[in-house]
Structures are given as structure tokens and as C-alpha cells.
Length: 514
Image (cartoon, rainbow, N blue to C red; front, top):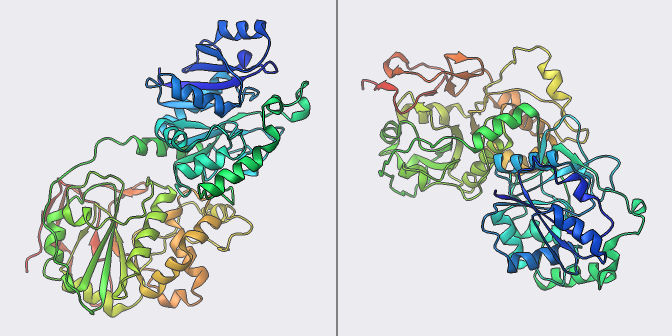
């Protein structure tokens, strides 16, 4: 069994009546700090391990961590002993934590709970929310995040500040590693419901716990989470999609060692930004497209997997990475991260977003001239088959959203430098303040963002022509093509589709006759 629930229990609790059903998928360890021998014996007869020791919850857990063998456990739910949560709720918490590979998560609180932070209150209709905050009374850690906390923990700390400490120790800006689980709610009782008052009050130096934390924080240069907030919300259906992507089967791996020369040039360049799960499906075709044109392009990549065999994708990964999955916020954030990196090179004038299943239809000269001479961005407008969809997603914008209306678009796009600069300047902040409830933000965000910040956007964007040929759709996505004859795609006078999807490593491709 790899799940452990730990609590530090006194005499004024009923955890033993709530958490210990026979169907539990976890063990329960307790440090008892009370004075009643009969209560101690009662707990001992029910839990998997118990010992007596004075101290606060994390002081006592630290003692266990240092002195007991915890190697068989991978996840640790460290609960206050008065938290009202069922065995089934705890089972589900462990399952979700594992399925989503969360570093730290917690159940939401019922509205009648004692609430310290608004972000922890249960959200009806939400399954879970990615957040930047998990409160100290109910954190569920994976092994790595717990080890990170224990490596910096100090026994002088008494409750106060420990949640700030473990968020800091595990990285403050990880957008898919911390979550509040709305599918499971628990109750945190108010202080006036405790007949004998807060048992924490009995701990030595309790009244100085805030000052102890402040001194510790200053000494160790710890940055606190300031705004406790939701990054993004998953419905039940989105959660089902997300967990499948987290535990995706092994990705195709193809070793391709060729790379490109690093040529300094003042020529206008196109930044090719590859948002991929793993390797390009047709690396040889891309290599032929790029070679001998190093003075007119740069490559940037953001791959879901670290198992990359294509050298020019592997060596051009951006440093700022996000968890990506279909319909998730990471697709937008990863795109922004590539744009922010590419905008640093002032010779990059156009920014093209592509994926691993894309291929070029034409030669580099033709594509380059079409993009550079056209000058406009290429973000293709789309129309949802449900006529009520536009109103539905517009109603999902928060009241204080800087984006006031939403337009749908294709994810794959080309931006000119003016529009890329807007994304660089406003991308992350505007996303956080507008898209937390949006179901598929990559299909609305960039078009809506640029409409908001560029008052002449209709004039500056070619909205009716996609950069990718996306024919052969089935439901919501194109089918993988079994064969492609590039000679069937004719060159045209006007701007038109320049790339093609969706191919894989088995697609038979007939190259263009020169």
C-alpha cells in the first residue's frame, strides 16, 4: 500500500469514526499528544501505527519522517485531526492525486467551514482547480514534494507559515502541480465548535508562532504566495481527458541527429515554434525544408516529453515549460513561452506555431516570401456548429476580465512581430485574469487577446485563410492521413495554406517535383 494518512491527534477529535472504514486504500499513522490513556488505547486498536509525543502536527510528522521507514509510501495526506472527511473522500483524493500526478493537492472546504482563504471554498460544477495555494490543514503530498519540504523544515515552526514554506520549497509558479479538488469536499470546524477550545493552544510557544515564522522566513529569504488564486478549472469531462494525457502511452521516438548551422544574419527571419508531444513525425521532410536557409529562420520548441530524438527539436527547447494536454491551459501558456523567447531576437519578424504532425507543403523560399511579403498575421476565424456556443463561452469570462468578448479561432497561426509583442506584453497576465473557466482556451485566447489590444486587428490580420490545411476533419480533429502527394497542392498568387496536418511517421509522402 503506497498511501499514508498522518495526523497528530488529541482528545477532542472524531477522526477515528470518519477515516477508518474497512474499504480504505491507505494506512493511518497517528502521533497522540493527549493525556487520556483510554483514548490512546482506543486509537491504538483502530489505526496502523501510533505513538505518544507532544508537539504540533508537522513537528510530530517531522519526528516520524526522521525516525521511521516510510519507503513503502508514495503519497502522504497530512490532516488536522478535526477535519471532517469520509473514508471514501480520502480514497478519492489519493486516486486523483495519483491520476493527475499532483505534487500537492487538497480537498475543497464546505461553505459552512472555517475559511481562511477564499480559494479553498468548494466550487459547485467544478471537478478540480489548478491553484497556487494549498492550505496547511489538509495537504496531500507526493513523495518528492514532501521530501522538498522536509529538507527545509525546522522544528521550531508551529503550524503558522508551513503552507507558505512547502509552496516555496516546491516552486511558486507550477501551474499544473497544485490543485484544490472540488469533487471532494471536507469540513473544517469553527473554533467555537470545539468544546475544549483549540488544542493547538496547549503547545509551547503557540502564541509566538507567527513571529517564529517571520524570523525563519527572513533568515532563509523565503518568498510567500501573495495572491491565492485559481489558475484554471476542470469540469468532470475535462478531468477525464486530462488524466488520460498525464498517463499517455509511450511516445514514438525516432533518432534524427542532423542539425542546422548557427548563422548570424540581419535578414528578417521567421520563428518556427513547434508545440509537440514528442518528436516530429516527419523530421527528414522538415530538415530538407530548412537546410541551407539558416540565415532566415530560428527554431523554438516546447515538447511534452523529454524523450526527444530529433536533434533540432531537442536542442531548441524553451526553458519555461508547462504541462500540456488537449484543451488545457498549458497549450496557451507553452505558446506564450515560445513567443516570449523568440521575441528576444529582433530579427524574428514572423512567428509560426506548428505541431509534430505538421509538414511543409512547399519549399522554404516560397513559404518565406508568402509570409514576409504579406505582412499580416494569419489567425483563422472559426465558427462553432452550436449557435449558442459563443454566448456560452462569453458568459464564462470573469466580471473583471480585461477581455470583454470572445472569438473562436484555429490554434495554429502566424503572428507578425506587432502581434507577437502584444502577446509578449500581456499574454500571461491577461490569460490568468480571463481564461480560468474557459473549456478550450487555445481555440479562443489569442484571437480574443489581439482583438482586445489591437484596435485595428481586423485590418492587420488575414482572418479567413488558415496557415494550415486542416481538411479531412472527423468530429473535432482531422484524421491522420495515410498518404500525401505534395504535387496536388498548387502554388497560388494570393496567401493560402502553407503547411499540412495531420500526418504521422507511417504516412506515405510523395515529395514535390522540383
